[in-house]
Structure formats: structure tokens, C-alpha cells
Length: 78
Image (cartoon, rainbow, N blue to C red; front, side):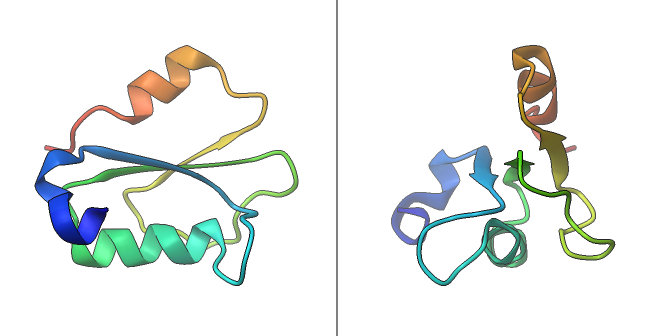
């Protein structure tokens, strides 16, 4: 979806643990590299990301997620 319409996206929410072989941390770095205008929020109940595992601009929020924190984290980047 991002390959075809990245300009229409302002935010990405992903869990660290995802089905398949790609983690949410890998996805966050990929999206940040290709589309730096997209705000990235990574959530998890299982673990916190290690130092340097996420892009510097990404926000990590532990579950359970408070809606106000999610909305705040998804504000467009300057």
C-alpha cells in the first residue's frame, strides 16, 4: 500500500511481534528509510525495543495503549 500511495499516509502503528519473518522494528526502520514523513508508533506487551532498534523519531508505547498517547504520537512530523 505504501509503495502505491505513501503520500496519503501520515502514520504507521505496528506491534513489535508480527506474523511472518519481519518484526515491527524491521518494518519501522524500512518505512522510516523510504518515507521519513510518516510518523511511526511501535507497541508491544511482550517486550520493549532495545537501544537503537527503532528509528530515532519512532515512538514506543507499551500495551495497554492509552488512546491519548497514541493520538499524540501520531501527530505529523515537523
